Image 1 (spheres, rainbow, N blue to C red):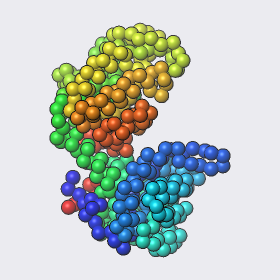
Image 2: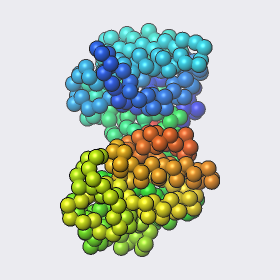
Image 3: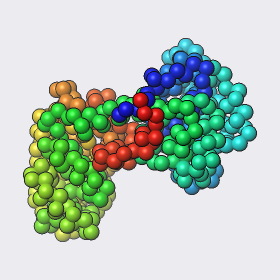
Image 4: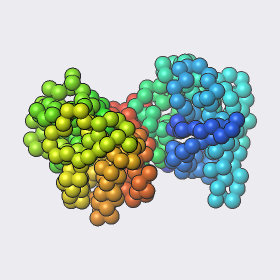
Length: 403
């Protein structure tokens, strides 16, 4: 996209406001809260380190959870600040000063920002502790902008939100640019949409067809195959006249699903067999059935014949995008389909395919399968990735300075 990037900015001696995505899971350990998964924090390190190496000062803005516009201790970024200090010191041979101010605005924030030394990092408290963040309040955005000289957005996971820290702030700074993570996301997803090598295969799963309709519509004319799994497949199957037993079905989307399937002209592939159980429990009696799902049973994963077909298609692909699990992979008895897709993507990558994985469940699955380093790109954005693939303009990117 024709937007400034971090490498276009002269950051020496500048205070650079950086919107990061530190919306990470926390765990309770005694009376302390700790970061349970630091994937998103580590993803921001290249941008932060580049700023510091070039003589800049980094003032970090992030949200965590949904505190609904008021301070809530369980959503504090204090544990993230502690973890960031450890990460920035690892392997660098130097200690990086990381300050945390337990406030979003006010004199304490201004004082800390003004005192920040060259090469220093300041993390503000959760942006969503202020009600003006999600309302894109201009006064709040101006107050944040006054803390620094330049702005960098490196939070792809929030780029689809028009908030004060992603959009409003850009109206009050001299230049605003993409950080390395955001730039990488745009480059990979842009390539998938605009110049994919063929065969191009999309793998879509998850619970609801309604969450993916926009993506399916935008991809249908671009892909060679669209492989459907997860509970959303039962809505398609029921729309086509198949029995789905107790499986999750969006009854109000049946006509839409049927129309999409017919429009696809054979591109949409649906499961031909299913791992079914009598209850939504890992230990419930389960078996594999071909074709219709009997009354009293529900589909919880794709079956082996479906996997064989999907794997064959994936291994011939030159471009693959995957969003959504094939089954209830959190339960070991219904995880085979999802992990098999992860394995197939890793193998396709080794054969030269461009493979992009996104969405919270898909990312969790590929991490658990151990293949996260064997695909081309793992996206940090769930909703943002879906909207990008739908062809929508993401406000957090559109607001940045044009080249």
